[in-house]
Length: 200
Image (cartoon, rainbow, N blue to C red):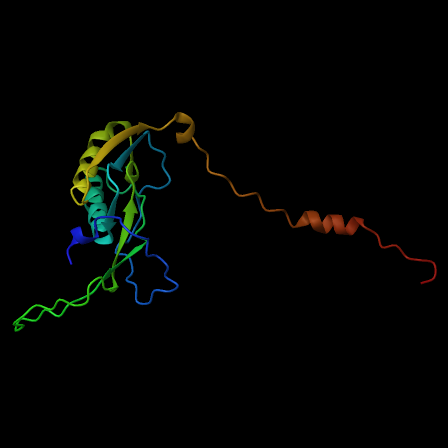
């Protein structure tokens, strides 16, 4: 079956791995790329304009193409790319016998249940698929990267630019509490004197 057969998000979601045997693993290898510790000034979203299902190979292809544009411009530390959706939906297919010497087509049973063949993510209208964090002068590069990634998806999309507030940029990482010195509990233990009763 072709990709357009799985494009419409109709029917009940098929995601219960507890009862599904032999489900394929997602092809998406990473969901966060680039510099994850630096705070950037701009946030660029790739937003879906339709309700659609996106297969995992399309998500991986879009991630690789967008990451390549950003990596060629900034290297490893000048940006951050985040994939916001996960392919939970398990796709099924009733495979037919199609050999080279077949003299007639196999029709098979109608509305057959099928076996797991792939994964997909259900995306709603207005939901962000990819987010790029860049400096102020990197908005054009982020737009180019997301525009390249949008060609891999089977729906219309739009790109929005958001300015990150200064308070959010200047977040200080939470420091771990300082370990207690070993001398303090020892000194406190020495100060306590045992109480001896008269009958002992």
